Image 1 (cartoon, rainbow, N blue to C red):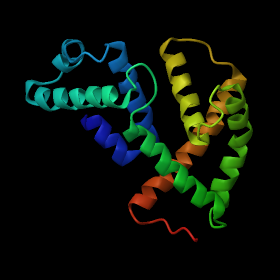
Image 2 (cartoon, helix red, strand yellow):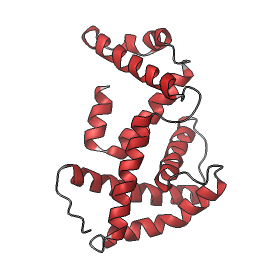
Image 3 (tube, helix red, strand yellow):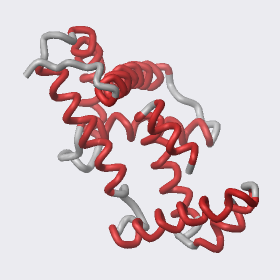
Image 4 (cartoon, rainbow, N blue to C red):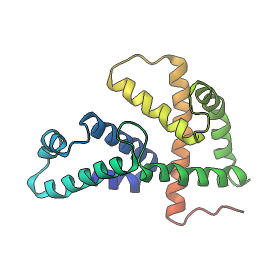
Length: 180
C-alpha cells in the first residue's frame, strides 16, 4: 500500500505495472482476504497489518464490484491509462516536444505489431505498451528467454513510456506547459 503510494508519486508507469501485479496476485489467491492475510499481510509489522489488510480488502471488493475478478483491470488503473493517453495526445499535438514525438514514432511500429497480434484492436495504444512491459516482467519472473528482437522492442517502448511518465510527473507538479 505504501509502496503503491510511493510509486504513484515517483513514477506513474511503475505504479501501473505494480497495480496490475497486485490485481494478478489477488486473482491467484481467489480474491480471498483470508488467503491474502496468511500469505502476504502476515509478513508486515503488526503496526501496519490493519491498514494493509484494509487496502487489500478494498481492492478485492472493487474487483468484485467491477467484475474484474477473472481478468481485466480496476477502474482506478484504467483511469491512469486515460490520463496518460490524454497527456500523450497533447504532447503529440504540440510542436514543443520533438523528442517525445521522436520516441513515440520510434516505438510506433512495435505498437502496431503488438496491436495486430492482440485480439482487442480497440485497446488504447498505451495499454498495449504497458501490456508488453508487463508480459516481459512475467516472462522474466518465469526465467524465460526473451529474443533480441523482442528485447529491442521492449527497450524502445520502455524508453517511450519512461519519457511519458516523466512528462506526467512534470504536469502534476505544474512544470509542463502544453500549447493548445
